[in-house]
Structure formats: C-alpha cells, structure tokens
Image (cartoon, rainbow, N blue to C red; front, side, top):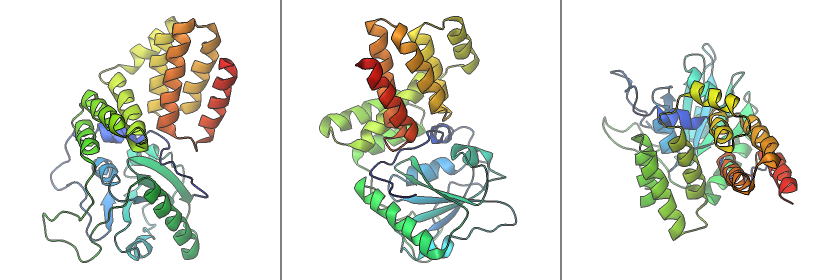
Length: 302
C-alpha cells in the first residue's frame, strides 16, 4: 500500500459479506469475533462483525493457508490496540478470500469504515510491514477511524472491546444494514450528509446502501435476461451494471454504461451519469478503473 491517499474505498465485494450478517446464523460455538487483545480468528460466518468493527478501529486482515501460520500478530500487538488483526484461513473461508480477490496466500489487506484497502501479497520484512501499518494509521486518522481496543489480557467472557462509538446516524445505518433494511440505511446516511456534506464516509456508505437496496430481492438471471433482451434500455443496463459492481466487476459495469451512453436521450444520459458517479464513490477515487472511467465520461459529456 504505497501512498494510499485519503480514500478508504476499494472493491465492493465486502457488501456481500455484510448482507450475510444474519443469514444463516452462526452455528453453535461459532460466536462473532470479539477481540481478545487485538488478534481474532475470523471466518465467512463471522466476518460481517469484523467489517462492522472496522468503523471504529482499523482492521488488518491476514489470509493464510493451512500449514502456514499467521505471522503478523506480534507486530500488530506492538501498536497497543490501535490496530486489530483478523486472521483468516483462506482455504476454509472462500467467501472472505473472494471478497479481497485473493489468488495466492499469504496476503494482507485492511478494512477501514467497512471499505477494503489493499496492502501486500506475501509477508515482507518487519520494517516494511511497520511502514505500511503506519501509512494505514495515517489513512485511518484522515477518515476519522481512530478508536482502539483493549490490548491487554483477554477480557472475561462477555466483555466488550473498548471502542470509540460511531456517530449516531452512522450507527443507525450500520444497524439497518445488519438487519437487511437498506432503505433505512440510505435514509440515515442521507441525514448525515445533510448535517455534514463533507462526511465522506456517509457519502460512500449511502452509495453502497443504495446499491444493496436496488439488488435486494432481485434475481440475477432475470436481470441479465432482461438486459440481453433490451440492449438499448437504460433501466435494464443499469440493473445489470449493479450486479457487476456488487461482484467487484467494475470494468464490466463501466464499459457497459459508457458504451450505451451516446445512444441515450437526455433523461437516460442523466440516469447513467448519476449512477456512474455513485459507482465512483463506492470504488473510490484512488481506484485506477475509476480514473479511466471518469475520463471517458468527461469526454462523452463535453
């Protein structure tokens, strides 16, 4: 993660993990991760709670393979609770591995405010790891993710980590997403933006919650069939673009809408322009795919 800049967005596959927060419920004995000190073992079933924790404290995610033990625990512990490490067996938890688009392990990423931040593949030297973690903390501070957890001994059963609370409207939105009430999450984020138009987390959160709301209850095969039957329909192509973005296939969504754009009337162009701007918020300005698509959109507009 070199020169990460102020954004904390990235691939949006994490939305699928958040969507599964309550269904199905974890089996007995697989409780959500509560940090014991600063290191937790996470799984597909419990990862939504890790994502929610990242709104309060930066979470480093180390994906490893059987026979290759996680390596970052001692380094993370030296940060005194300002970072949490979630270790994930990538082979046993393909959902998390796919969310981060991991093709080889060990691999390390981070989550800030529910958004993934790429870090590195393999484990570099301790000094190099610390340099990246220091950048991560700077990025977290720029985005208001400055909480911490108790880095001491493991808490007693039932004890909660010491964390900074989310702003009330952000908490309301997170709770709504966990319950599958995406309309309420959009409303909460919208109110937060009204109160503070520069609330970047709320802007990105609303874009992602809006995407989840549009896809809620939708059948992917039906959406793709409708798009194939109506290649010139803005509504049909926007719907299938939502599917592409929800799976992290940003280039497919951008190409689809930008190639359609010149053939649309004024209303259709405005709908596509607005949706693309929303996708840019979800992915983040530092994503090179966004920069390329933004340039293409600008040329089409002017």
